[in-house]
Image (cartoon, rainbow, N blue to C red; front, side):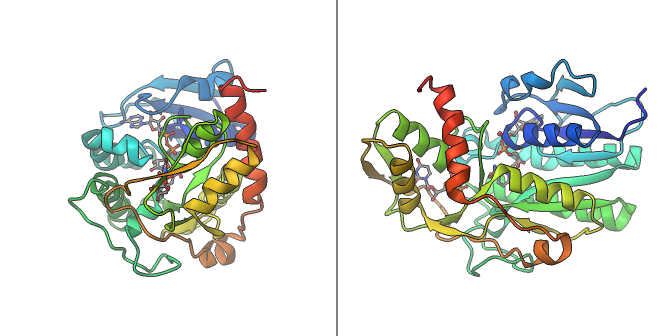
Length: 316
Ligand code: NAD
Ligand code: UDP
């Protein structure tokens, strides 16, 4: 048995989860990673498999979870996260947000562990308030195609607050805004991997709708810094973490074409149902309470992401 802080990361073989495992190990934790690999990839954690402070179990966290020995933190990141993925796996998305959150909260209660939920800006839906602060209750279509993700996360937040209020569990909720970086799946359908892959292959870059919808994208290292600060804080209410620098999707596509020195042209495709028109985090709370601010510019983050994508595509 280890005398270290033991942290369980669900979804640890995914994009964000794998970066989180890295950071927690760097901080001296023993990390137990649970992932059923539905949208994750073992390659993301291949470098950790021989590490004595890391243990991976291929496991579906919607089932009862048994872990022997002490557990100090549980970070629940398991869930399909790209619109393409959660539309492909609607029931699994609802189950991991509901049953998976119930199982991981139950484990936290049994172990008296701290619990951190990976929530999302999607709880604000297609927002009628701009920028979005944590006090906004959102504008979500429960029966739309995105509802499987949005409502699962809203339920997960409600369940987390119920365990906090009724069982006195020590909980955190991070509302993550669009984050990008190395280890995103090339074909996960999200804007940055899609544009980057298309541009590097000199294929048409697919902008949905007129491209005037906005997002505000955060580099993964900044996001992980914010999550670690939140974990170590005493804030039980949700906190937005994201980069408030807003850009239209069309501009983002142009930036990526320019950065990759690509011959690609933009083509306009149908806008997916319920696609939010605007999105920008209000990060006042994170700045004041966590002393957190994103540091990596979009340009620098895109350069690092491009290097990763070039390697994956065998482009020099
Ligand atoms: P990802 O798809 O790369 O990672 C999710 C991981 O969860 C995958 O490895 C997948 O195999 C695993 N998983 C899914 N269902 C599971 C189950 N039932 N049991 C065990 N493992 C399961 O996605 P990501 O971008 O890394 O997102 C991670 C978390 O962060 C998700 O909860 C997502 O909702 C949240 N989030 C991400 C973003 C973002 O911009 N990346 C934004 C908002 C919220
Ligand atoms: N998008 C796009 N082309 C693509 C993929 C996405 O124009 O090939 C748009 C999408 O419609 C949305 C924005 O880019 O308006 C961000 O999409 P993403 O899937 O990255 O995340 P979302 O914020 O919608 O969850």
